[in-house]
Each structure stands twice: as C-alpha cells, then as structure tokens.
Image (cartoon, one colour):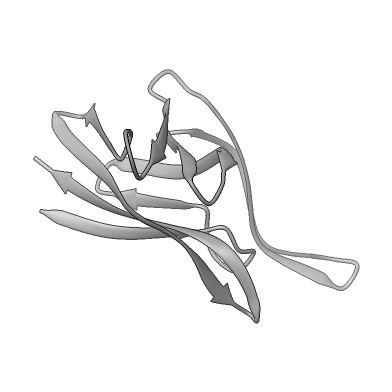
Length: 118
C-alpha cells in the first residue's frame, strides 16, 4: 500500500503526518534543497485553538526525541529514500518533490513523500 503525504511549512498546515503507526514530522532543518524528517517524535505538549491577545493558534506542539525516534535528512539527489521498521512493518519513505506552495497569499516550502508499507 502506498500513501502520499505533503508537509507544508505554513502556519495553516500541520508539520506532521501519520501513516498507519509511523509519525513523520518536519525537523529543525529545511530548505529548498533538503529537509530533516523526525520519525516517531514524542509529543510532550499539544495545544489546539488557543486564543490570547486576539490571536488564535490553531495548533502548537512541543516534541522531543524518544527511544524510537530517528531523524533522516532527505534531498532529491543522494538521500531521497529511507526505510524504517515499526511494530513489525517496514516503511519505505521516498521524497518525491520539494516546491513552493502558495497558501493564504504567501509562499511556503512544501515537501511531498510517498510511503510504502509492507
């Protein structure tokens, strides 16, 4: 089974996605040529729809590396694929595209992946 996901670095989109039992989240380093993806980060705190000072934050999350967390740097040349095993399943993650996506009138980095699960 193949899933397609897109992670967009805009304030309107989540920075993580879940494919079956695997959580993928954009790490600290990202650019127009590469992106760090944290696999299975530990969520310490998560806040949704908090309002303060007239501003509403749709979602904020604090994460850290847990015992099963791993980070991989993807690019479109030498490091476009990565495999990780979780709960008896093998996930093959492939970076398909890095592009700019216009959301809310502004342009943000977007990373598209395919994930095959065996």
